[in-house]
Length: 447
Image (cartoon, rainbow, N blue to C red; front, side):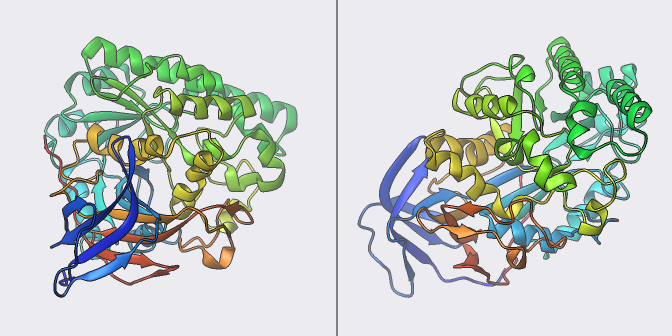
């Protein structure tokens, strides 16, 4: 890494571990050197006047699809990690369903090689599970991947795990956290067949939550939790989308939980009514569902029934999204505007700012045993985001940095914006522009 001068951030409102407090923070050799009040500049040090802006630990997104290798016409590690940094995400964990999928140690290490020197943020890659790679999962070094991803519902390629014996083996023997996509494939198939019989190929996109139904989510999530309880598995259920599933999880602090839940920013921003204007642009799996689900998910963040907030960033080209509903791919690009969209809940008084930081930074670091990141602590890596809480802006397509070139938030007005993002002490986004630095490092797991 190119040497970056030491920096002193003064007059900030720091948000960390349940507190908001005025103070200063010094960065030295890429780490947080000191946190205090009235810190004095040293010779050669760059002074950054935060002017009362919010200084947060950089966000850790535990669920992204950056499309490399194999699908780089949609996005790649360089473009999507830059978009993430512009949104205040300083570390990311990528899903295994690339082409080829990351189903063994060699393919996993290949992806790490692709990220080295090209990622703006810090990076890690989940290992994928299939019906026939159980022995590979058993041999996985737990320090080489944050988790093992199990698609317990429909997926691309050879990644749908529906063999009962394999599922038992994964939940019994997994050396890392098991992370699951929970949708019941037979239920989805039956729902789609019924709608095709009624409407032919002209099924409208607003029926997506009827095909990828709440029943499909509930059945699969119940199965995952049953397996985890039977085997004592450390289970993390991804992208909860329904109020129904929330009853399966325990409210309260993350510490001590063996089974945790996550939701994603789009489930907090959209509901079934938005299909009328956005159509396939918000088609994703699991589906965005009812207004009541949206409200229940927000409430579950406040009572700590949901432990983590992520993106499930999954870009597709506009041409792909303009296909008829049944042919259009699922997924949407989210990293660039994830933090500011979530901050709308803070502005609305629905979520306290320290709670948001807990969901988007502290909890992912704790859940996946990420070493020395996710907190504003002396000695930790200086992954930081400075947010201007009172500088509204409107999302314009011309400003989208993801390779796909569009955002479901286009036209939306957000009340805050990301002013500066630091990764390992290096500014990578400053006042509306990328700096071009790519200081991202491989995440380390203290297991």
